[in-house]
Amino acid sequence: MKTYTLPGTNEKETVVQNMFTSAATAYDINNTVLSFGLHHLWKRLTISLLDIREGHTVIDLCGGTADLSLLAAMKSGKTGHVLTMDLNFAMLRIGLEKVRAKQEKATVAVVQSNAEFLSLKDSSVDRLVVGFGLRNVSHLDVALSEICRVLKPGGRFACLEFSTPVNGIWRQLYKFYSFALLPSIGKVISGDQTGIYEYLPASIARFPDQEAFCAMIRKAGFREVSYRNLSGGIVAIHVGVR
Image 1: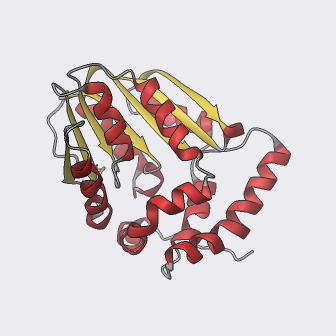
Image 2: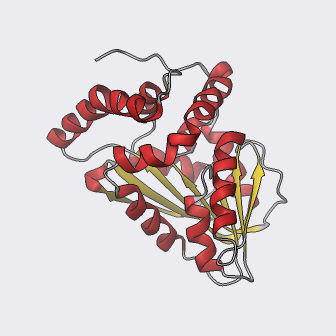
């Protein structure tokens, strides 16, 4: 297994955006193949924990290809507002195509935006969800503070992210899959040459574990912070209340 060196904070945004631009057209199929289809279940569970109601304003931050946005729109209904926000234009273009295909059933708008500098008013959002996106921001603490700022008092935040498997043997198997198999499979499917499928497992390994991430969410200003492990802790859903 090759060792991948993650980009430094100063160059991370540019490097990551180049990677996702390259991988955008194959992103959805790679998610399905590499997760054995489980990402659909993970996303549905995340939306269910967010407790979206009819008429809610919902932000899908780092929303990319809009999977979570479309699920959220089914909950908020025609009187609600769902906004897909992502910095990467190529990913948003894929998301917009999916939104247009289902426009009769869901009302979703798509906006290019940086998670660290949200162009939203204070206390203007009922619910905010992030799926597999916060690993890619340059300053995680800043992004969490922005999320807290834009949520209304009592508003809910949910983050679906790869995490740390709870069982030692399972952790080693997952590490082997992530670093030895995933990059090769991802490259074959996408034809990508930017290194995104080496970056992804390396960024997962660097991301805070479940308890450490809970502490960061609390520090950003959230209460009632908890998490739910899925697939043995390969993935975790963190939830907090503004």
